[in-house]
Amino acid sequence: MTYNRLESFSIVLLVPKWIHRVQSKKQESTFYVTPDHPYEILLFFRCHINTRFDVSIDICGVNCPSQEQRLRVLYQLPTTQYNSCIRIKIGVNEITIVSSVISISPSAGRWEREVWDTSGVHFSNYLGLCRILTDYGFEGHPLRKDFPLSGYVEVRYNDLEKCVVYELIEMAQEFCYFDLASPWQA
Amino acid sequence: MNSRFKHTDPIVVSMGPHHPSMHGVLRLVVVPQGENVIDCKPILGYLHRGMEKIAENRTIVQYLPYVTRWDYLATMFTEAVTVNAPEKLANIQIPERASYIRIIMLELSRVASHLLWLGPFLADIGAQTPFFYIFREREMIYDLFEAATGMRMMHNYFRIGGVAADLPYGWVDKCLDFCQYCLPKIYEYERLITRNPIFLKRVKGVGFISRQEAINWGLSGPCLRASGVQWDLRKIDHYECYDKIDWQIKWQTEGDSLARYLVRIDEMKESINIIQQALKLLPGGPYENLEGRRIAQEKGRMNWNSFNYQFVGKKSSPTVKLPRQEHYVRVEAPKGELGVFLIGDDSVFPWRFKIRPPGFANLQILPQLLKGMKLADIMTILGSIDIIMGEVDR
Image (cartoon, rainbow over all chains, first blue to last red; front, side):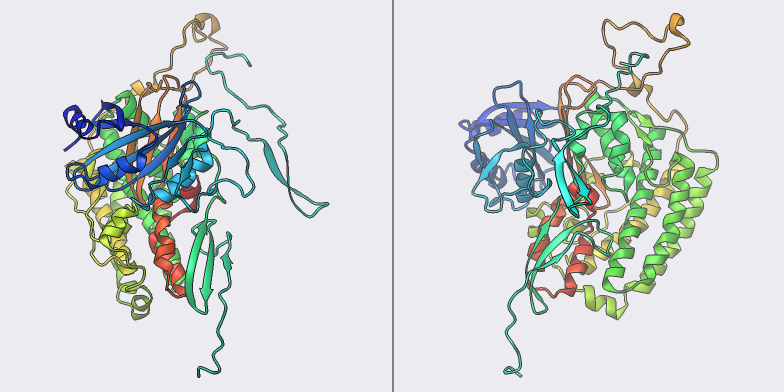
């Protein structure tokens, strides 16, 4: 049973306070949720008999600088009982704190750490929220659009000091963006 | 006895990033007390290469060589999911021959990945012999890949709309020969390993994951199927042409490391079965839907390939304009559910390319499994979960 529009709207009627709007495309439904209640809504989706979305398969952070709520957190929830998948979207900005859903589904732990590390969305009620993918003393959140692709620091081994040092990045060649439509060099 | 037994304080051991086993660079900070493990904390990020950020600055065709570096042992799956995402977004159909070729390549890649799981898993436990034998079949698979795609490991083979090149003449026969050769060898591995009492002592009852726990922790792939959940994305999502082939989901109920081993061995046999059927069912026809090569038209540009510029004209790289939609596609990789969440932005570059690696989720259960186990069980459990750090860290 894949979720179509009728069933999505029936879910919305059950919890109207929390859901902004619903989008249904290509047999996937996206629910836009207020940022204060991800915990409640995920608990609802997990336990309600018709929805049973019991796994948190992916949590993703998206940075849309042109919109008012610059960061989005997306929860991807499939269900093992009925074969379908929904998506929950929360729009936050850099200083909003979202409540963690790790007590509902423990698999969310690593994903939330990754969202914190790469996009900078802070999760409350999560004891071990620290950087997971980037370096130990890394500053900044890489997947934000204002963070450059090459980063700010580079690492090299300094033979005089006999250790690895961090230095500001020095590019010998600027980033090659190939302008494919023009045969001449840019 | 008790008076000579000193109370040992727990020490913190860092099973550091450099491992003799082939998982990659994973750092396990283990707190053992004597021989028992009290706690364990995996620290990732040593192989983080910023794949997701790079994807935002590359077209899909430019990004395909990067993609095989996520899971470098089962490379066809990473390519398949990267190419499936724009196909679903832009609604590009693939011809049937391409679909069958993809199935054959994916299943060969699955056999290769499980073989290279088997070798190091047993080498960690202490049996070094299978480690040499698996490379025999894996080299044959490499040869088949090289004949079809040009590269042994990091093939840049899948394209949006099909595959890059058709199978060379005689490849189908060679592949059938390989299947006939490989199946008795898998039975040979079973005869060598499965009822070996030392192996059973090391593996039986170790790392038990119950059914509900497996679902809660978001496991997928053989770890989930070994705990009694018959969840295989090939049957559930009905992607490619798997429905036209007669095959079964392999699963076990025990949920320990032995069950995961048995699931993977059975999957290898089933993959050979699928390959043989797909080779017989392979239809003729085109191997690529050329709509995927449509060049993103930019207004106001002169036509550099016209008659006036014919000596300096440039062949543009095929690009597909990703519509302003988002989609999550997933594929049953040998390690689990490999997914890509793609948000398009009406341009040739994706806006957000989120990779959902199976190893990242499967690794989360490791600390819980290790509490109370012996130090020697760490490698057994870590090996049976089958992670590869290239995709965990991206």
